[in-house]
Image 1: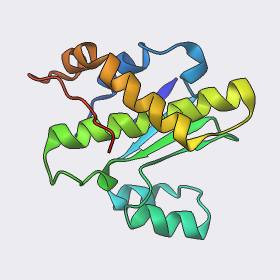
Image 2 (image 1 turned 30 degrees about the horizontal axis):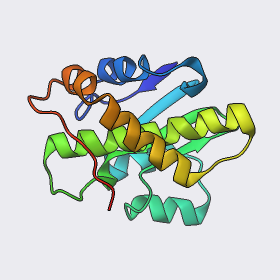
Image 3 (image 1 turned 90 degrees about the horizontal axis):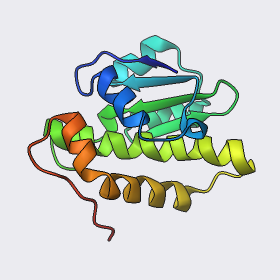
Length: 147
């Protein structure tokens, strides 16, 4: 697995360490972390026009590309709790785990399920809160509460 990342928000090492908590079915060939909209534009990311617009507007947090076995995470979309770095990291990890679940779904059933991917990401973060907090260097554990 290759990680392409500027390392400003979450280091590649931390991403690898989080991914090591998962089995091989979850791990794509490549993970790309886009920190800014400009990163998306300069990368020539192949998206259909609607997806590109939705991504640039911050409406898409991540994608899994079956053809290239690639997960892309758009950190700039994570602004629900303001500009707090830990919040951006936490919700970007949720997006990453959500997309990695899609990879696992595709490998095992050829069926992508949004509800399952979201539930998996939430449960994984909550069930591994202590390990993830340690990997990320957070003083406190974080937990997602479903509304």
